[in-house]
Image (cartoon, rainbow over all chains, first blue to last red; front, side, top):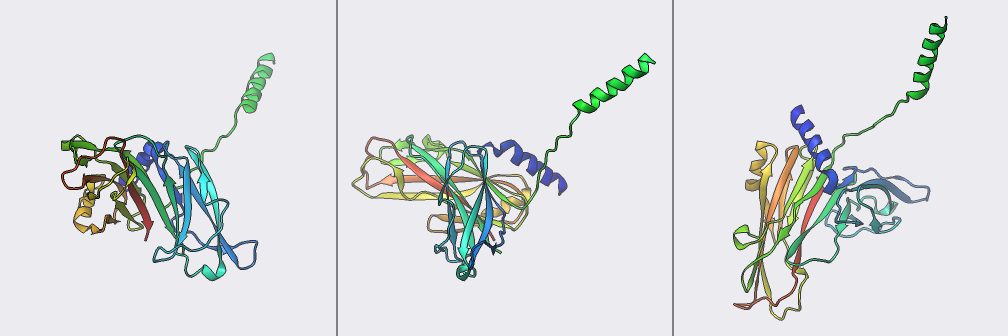
Length: 125
Length: 164
């Protein structure tokens, strides 16, 4: 079991030059400096050379959009950059908000190709 | 006496030169999505674009790494529209399939039997920690016996990792 985990960690480290990470898996909402507004901090790591922008969204359990505020909904993250993103949600939306997702944005270019859009969703505790 | 002084100075120099450098790390539950192979559409017949290697294409492959079992599900969607193409006057019929192509733990080979398919989406519960490679087969047929107009075609596979 431990060997498998070590191999996996080595695998992630060695191949992380083209990956997309979004953590924590289960973020907790905390009181922000504003009354009736909660926030959580997410960390986005961009190791995809082909991607420079990510979008962020908050959704309920039916994947309907939940209003939220952040620095920018389209975030510029350079290759191998790790970025902290504060997500602000109204206290009244606390029970509705279920997922916080980041999605890679690809550029239009090339022909006869398929691109891979990656999207990682964390579940709010 | 001089030798003793010299020895003292040597130790002093070492003390000044040495510094502690920390490298910190953290292991936490997470899902990492890694595009492994870019896909390519072959054009075996004028009315068909196909990622199957037997048709001259390349199936796109994406790798999922999860550090803990049962924390995530993978949802992969094959394309049902072009993100880039010449103007098309007829309908395009899309067909696709997603399955594991490589696994780091033998038990992951059961993912194919347990997958859930709906519309153009396929979901896999990532019940084991480790790496799984998912291959997406995709093909598009234009109209009825019509040839695709010349130009660049590009479609998008969406690979999602959703915390459970």
